Image (cartoon, rainbow, N blue to C red; front, side):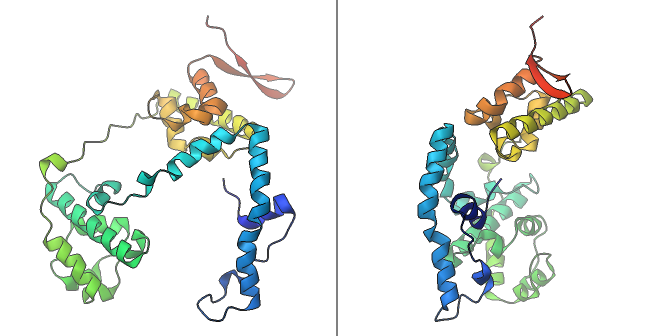
Length: 274
């Protein structure tokens, strides 16, 4: 699914990048010559790689694939982090207004802490710990020392005090903020499971032909949704994913495509509508 920089340079430029300085102490000054060479080598080869990779995209006609993948990455909305809406990204531990109110307050507090310290939010508190705190709030700051996922120091330090303040000021979630219930995911029948197996076989064939990792084309849960009959809001039925796999996947589940063995080789053929 991904290729490391070292392997990419070796494949395109036949150059072996020395990664030995990766785990040295980069906080010490001055940096030694090996560290400087490592840092320079980690970017300079990109000047050779970029035009070769762009040329390959053009030759294979896959420039639009890259456009599709980069659309989300280049959308400013992808990186907007509104602390007031941070709780909506979490798995809800309950549908009780008081629990969700605490979860909203805790998620807001964590987002602000992470932005202030410029670290990933998970470095402050893990999602599952936030859910536990919202469901079973501690009675006092000292109780934070006993919470799974927090160190004992939280029972008396400043960040623990700020967490408790966020909990204490948390009102129950307003009725108009209550999230809609997620639609029930269609379960796979025994026949659906067999269809999913056929789709996996088709995916393996198409991924090999395209030279693309199967998981980049479709996720396992979307494959099961397709086998169960869902058609809406599936990435695999959009854009380049539809072209190299989705169209044939639909034909397979709708009985318009079949597998056969000819001369010991697996082949696919279009079926008549009879």
